[in-house]
Image (cartoon, rainbow over all chains, first blue to last red; front, side):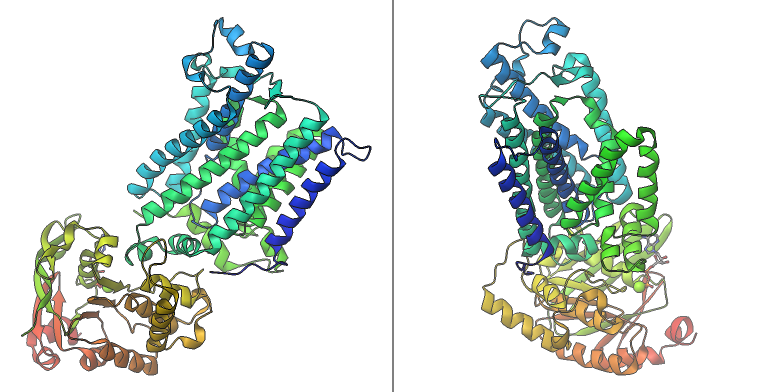
Length: 365
Length: 242
Ligand SMILES: Nc1ncnc2c1ncn2[C@@H]1O[C@H](COP(=O)(O)OP(=O)(O)O)[C@@H](O)[C@H]1O
Ligand SMILES: [Mg+2]
């Protein structure tokens, strides 16, 4: 219902992302090519930006705060890792560490078919939709919302972490999965592969941004905002808001899952620490700092916070938790709309303050 | 001869040990504007909550059109059956434009059903009726209190409801705005529509209502024309004579 011009921030951002991807692809293999380190960092940041958008879609536009989105990110990560290990094994005969560690002769039966990328992709989408669907249906049906929902999602990701820490689940346990050597028939770790993964992440980011922008600007997007602003009101106008929330929740989960699929090949490892509550909290911080409900804000927030974190991990690794807590306090008390407040030169917006308080503090029975 | 739109039959609603509605029965006909008055806490809003499916009663039923028991249906299903309600606290969507409110009121569903010209006509007509044509592209959050009240009437009106419930539509309005709202409510009266208005403003009630039901402690204290209400000793005692 709203229009998007060529100079709108989101169009500019999408253009910029595609441009960076094109330049990286064009320079690849030449003397001007980006360093492997930089190309890899750009690719990882793009995956985090996709993850941030997935949260903004439900928090910014639907008013549902999830503090467990790391679960869906991890699902993508684990599924792509299964593909990579199985595929590497089939191509080069490399036996995964965790099989040797457990003393197992063969992959567990549920690994069957994972050497085929399309199968792994479909399995990941189906599993994510199912898990998100069941959890969402139960919560939304019984009208769990606000702070209760946030806490339950946090508990969910924590339970998943405990489960994955077990060594007998067949997903690498404690040590996780690593030693990926081949992707789609190509050797991993080469400059070309690093660039290709980064470019793919950037393109997925551009597509996800464009798709989400289309969705939130549509009639359905208006209904999302209406649900966020007053769900009871919308229900008493004849709308099945449980279904609406479920659709967006599952979509958000699948986008987060895709981010995980892009991320893991680029860092070369997945382990249960992805499921730690901290990561899930951090996603919310990225979105809050960038400003909720703008999509662009989520991307900017993810880039900014991770850039600071990256830099601090060299400069002063111990103070990161304090910086993070400081940022949370700042966002809640002073900039309820994150950087969007700075952009508008309105340092305090009582309206927004009320909204963030409503999202985290209120749960209708 | 008038047909019964809503038959409220032996309704009891409890909050803990407190009875907000106590074996309440009443009938509302098509073609009438019914005012429901009574002191604060009498159960007026609770009655509308039960009819619109927000609150489940302990006992009793609400028959719509003589056939459907609404007490078992969801809020959304009740709304789609043709009953719409304006809330006591103006409830609009701060992040949507005035026009968007009327659109989602007129055309219910995740996808648009009406074709574009038909929807356009309907939206213009409703905006005209509630006097918000000039505000159509403004965000609801930016409207004045009175404009929010009218916007909410517009969005429930847009679906052409058979039963229209208005909870305190003139609370907080200026005299002039109250006057306009009274004219609007009278204009909405139709033979195939029942209008239920909860209000405290007696002059307003006198102007709009065909019949008045006085609630007190979850029960009907009196029912009749406004003249008779004013003359009834019990009503004056508990409500008007405060
Ligand atoms: N959800 C609730 N929980 C407990 N008590 C309630 C609830 N809703 C209403 N009540 C009580 O029920 C009584 C009737 O309320 P209400 O129907 O809102 O009155 P009014 O006639 O002023 O609209 C009041 O005493 C109110 O405090
Ligand atoms: Mg009331």
